[in-house]
Length: 119
Image (cartoon, rainbow, N blue to C red; front, top):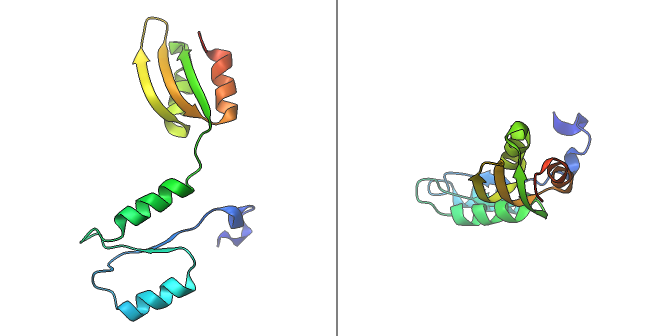
């Protein structure tokens, strides 16, 4: 189904198997050997959950441009994008606009710089 989508081969994939506490160990071992990136978890016992979290944290793309900007209230669309696309370390509402400190992708950083009261 995904084969027709351009670039799908480049998307990182992690296979997560739940119910490790009740699964047949031989089946789990077979799947683990066949799938190169498999994490076995048990939502019931919590086994494997930290390993899964660590793997996700390593594999997710991270924004790489630090920002320290004041976004005018008229540009709430940019504040929303920072919330959805970036990482916010500090947010404050002042008379001039929304103060944002954090990290975003390069293109969004350029848009913020163009709209910012300071930055």
